[in-house]
Length: 408
Image (tube, rainbow, N blue to C red):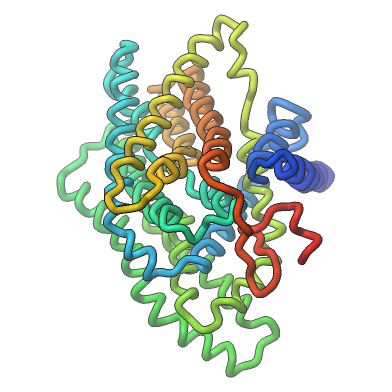
């Protein structure tokens, strides 16, 4: 990608994010829905100004979701998250089990080999927490108990999804899996979160005090950003999801007395990067895979719709299984619906290994598109619009709607 193409892509991303985000808000919908639609219009099925598969654009989008989950972590109280930990684990495990079983059953019913059916089932398991978190923020419900369960469950099923991704990837490569290897992978995946929070809670106050002593300009902001990126990098290094690392960094720094100052400063840089993620997700939507008039597309469109139905029903069932009194379980289920990059990675591994055809890859993509678009609509219907969370008198990036910009 040359500099001219790159600049044009950025222009298209920011204009479409602002324009369609604003339009969605005026129509009473969350801004993220407009950003997804705007991305589709400037992406592979529209003007082709944004190539979601370009390495540079992809990395910028990943940085956006890292910052998004870092800010979500900063705005989440670890105590509240731990209080709903049991419910979050129940929702995550049931959601993963139900969707995996449903996807496998569909593949088996259609006559695909068992390993292909396994790939289809696995592609349905992991929730794309960034979409749900943004919608809940736009609607002003990020601090609700249901939202805390969604965040906790999404982290758990992301970890389970990563474990499945690693195991199935090794199976696709023909490797033998021993019980010891599986146990090691599980311990590393869950152990990272525990260690990151434990060690980070001890390290973060020391880091902040050191920065304050040396009086570096905006030192607190840069130290916090480096801390988030470091935990995201370590998470990637040990085979976990980068967003789990950045979310853990936010949780840890939220325990310090500089939490609000860090939020305020991180807000500014996140304003640049976070919209890139949502527009790029939309830009990857290829509406040609949804063409019912094309005989070749129709079969895989139907499979994609079937996968989406299983994805939605499975996570809604998980939401209704959440233990606890007074919970809006339909909200929990709806918040667990969206799928994203993990699902596409599953499909990509299957495609690369020759187990999935391009048609089945498109079917998974259809499922991702439908679940990503369904979530904002369902949550908006289930939740009343509340006042977006304010951070020190200004609208927070992940908490505000585009229409609130004038107030900042």
